[in-house]
Image (cartoon, rainbow, N blue to C red; front, top):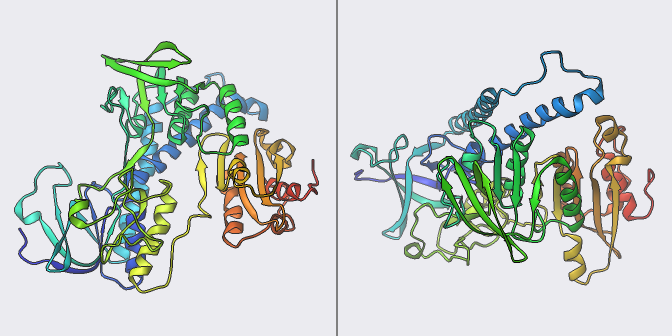
Length: 482
């Protein structure tokens, strides 16, 4: 074992979106920075087995479905050879996209002179200071030779250990037939029947991929609706559109048992007292994720944990333990990559002595189905239950010129504004490319804009963004095109 610890201003444990962005920002601020990551590549769940590969498959499957179902509407006819699916190439492209992103992060580490300590990090207090020990063989996960153990005397530590998918006790992940998001990204052939347990973001996105490619997809959701927590109007529109697309949505349905038998998976469900057994060749369990501390001993470190096992922090990402910060999925709040990134920036800038804090009002939430879903702020139900007087404005994409040229009529933009001040309280978008449109609204939230501010802003014609302008005007009772 190393006899002397190398000094570092900041050591980050975890190289996911929060960790690697925190490392880059800390290095930009002139701090000597080490990032500990035990996986073979940087980027964490998001880049390797989450956001990036799933969006690559979503995009590829959207192209396939467009060619199969909608190209003829645009005067594009498939030749006499017909249309075929090359799943091997599609999966290979997904892996190439992931590789481009992970190599990009490595380049940024080298550019910013960040040390990537390859292995598993542990944290302890030594003589009143912080020591991070790095151990573990990245390639095999086994115990390393003695000369592969590194130790760092850290002035500050940022914990960015992320989260892991939640298992069902009777359907443990084997990533062969009973899948988490990891296994669902590399199914070797199109399933005959994919059973998805969970009607949230991951279940709907990955379920949509395989439905487009030809699988029968059944989504089982315990709660009364899909997309729990989303605005009621958004949920109704998505339920209608997804059923029309061919997803078999079983809401208000409990999974009471399940098993794998060879190449088949059986999932036992119950609704209103009636029981049924679903038979599929794969089951994706997407019932949520839970914080992971990456093996760190919270009690020994003095970290305070919440009811889900998350590390409690203040608005500067400080844990309450001197010089120890935490960010990302292992702290409270939505488990979103962009939220983790911003927390990483706040933690790094706080360590550097800047006066910054994290606030969550303006964090967007996006679902990359088609149509896409995006939201920021409060739902109408939340505003109503708060007793606040408000106005609502909606504009459908069916009345938007650019959407018509695309053949995209589903969805809408919806604004909720304070009835007295016109300040934006919530925005909810369903439609084509709304993951991009929501950025304008987020900027408005950040600067406490009103719907009038957005409504009087000139938007280029013809663009999808005009639906945002019109919805803002509708909130004021003066929409132009409906």
